[in-house]
Image 1 (cartoon, rainbow, N blue to C red):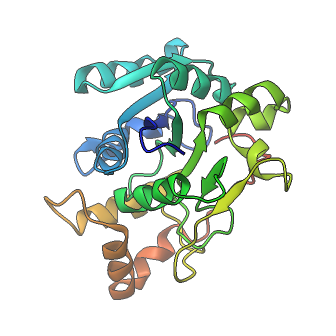
Image 2 (cartoon, helix red, strand yellow):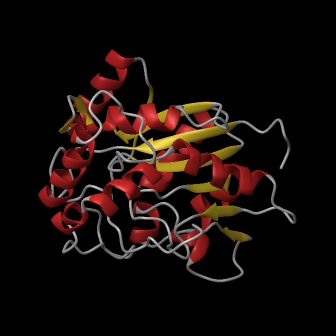
Length: 251
C-alpha cells in the first residue's frame, strides 16, 4: 500500500437501534455518544479524514444535524444497505483505505485504531482487509476494521446476502481465501469484556466508566482495564448481555 494512500475513517451511525433506540445520541458524560466516538477517532495519527455515514431517511435527521452543528463531515445513504452507504462515503471522500468504526463504541481508543491501520499499511504481502475482531482478544467495543477501497468496491459488487450488506464486512472474512486477511490481536485475551452499547445495561456501564474520569474524556483502553481490576463489579453491569452474531439483524 502506497505511503500516500488516503486513509478515511467512516463511522456508521443510525437512530433506529432495536434494543436501544436513538442510542448514538444518548448522553454520556455530558455529550452525545457519537461525539465521543468521533473525537476519539479523530485523535488517531494515521487517519487523513473522519466521516460520519448515516441513513437518508428522516429518522436519521438528528444525526445529520449534530454533524452540521459540530462541523463533522457527514454522508447520507441507504438505511439498510450499509455496505452501499460505505461505498458512497468512500467515493465522495476519495478514500484509498477505509477504516470502519461504529458509533456505539464510546470507549474507542485512537492507539488501537493506529495499530490496525499501521499493520494494514505495512503488510507484506499486501492485505485486502485487516481487523482486530477476527480472533477476538480485544474487548467488544474496540473493533477496528481496515480495508482497501478496491476490496470494498469488490465486496459491493459481489456481496448479495442481506446480512452482508447490512453488516458491511462479513463478505471479507466469512470464506477463507476470498480476500487477503490480516488479524491483529491484543497481547492478552480480553475478548470476554463488553464495552459497546446495545442495551440499557451497556449504557450504564459506559456512563460509570466515564464517571471515573471526570474532565478527562480521552482516557485510553488500558486505563479502563486498570479501572476494572480496581472495581471488578463494574464489568458485571453488562456481563449478561449477549453479543449478536453477524448474521443477525442489527440492534
